[in-house]
Image (cartoon, rainbow, N blue to C red; front, side, top):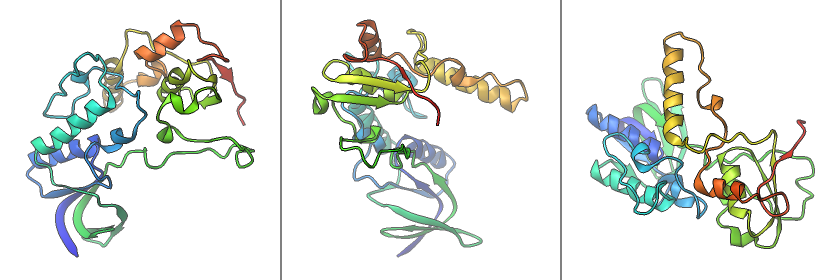
Length: 264
C-alpha cells in the first residue's frame, strides 16, 4: 500500500512530537511513524532510577508545560512517559505505531519511505529517531574473550541485578555517573573515565545547560566567538543520587571512584 503526505516524521519520542506540533501549526499534512508499540519513546526503556536532570517546568515540549511530579524536583521516567502520551493525545498528532522504517529513497520529485507496513511518498522527511536504538559498543581488545556479562547503558535496569558482584562502569558523562551512583552501595564498583569527572556545580541543572547551549548557538549565528556552550560548564549534572554517592565518600571498592584509562 502506498500513501502520500507532505512530511513524514520518523520517530515518536519527544523530538518527533515537537516536530509534529510545529507541522500542525503550519497546516501541513504529515504522519509520525513510530517503531514503538506505545507512546513515550525511549523513556519507556530506561533504567529504573533515571530522572530528568532539570525540573518539569524546564523540560517541556512546545505548547504545553510538563506538570510537576508530586514529591520529585526532577521527574522520573514514568512521569515523562505519561506527559508524552498526554501531549500526543492533546494535539491529536497522527502517530502510527508500531511502524518500522526500513529505508528512505530519493525518487526525484518526492522521497519514498519504505516501512514494514507499506510505502509513503512525501516532500520532506524529518528523522527524529534519536540514538537509543543504535548503542555504540567500542571494539575493546579482549572483549570477545571476556566471560563476564557485558552490556550497554540501554540494557541496564537496576542495581539488584548486580548485587555482590564486581562491576566496571565505563564513561564519564551523565549516564556513567548516574549508573555508577546507582551501583555504589551493593557492588564492588570501579568507575572508569578518560579524565577526572567534571561535575557541574551542585546548583546547576538542565536549566543552565539549555541557557548555555542557546547562548552558544546565538553567538555562532551572529558571527561572535564560540562561548563553548555546555562543554564549558562540565560533563556531569550533579543530580541528587550522584551528590549522595559522592558525598558519602564512596571509593573504588565500595562505590564511585575515578580510574584514568590510557588513550589507544
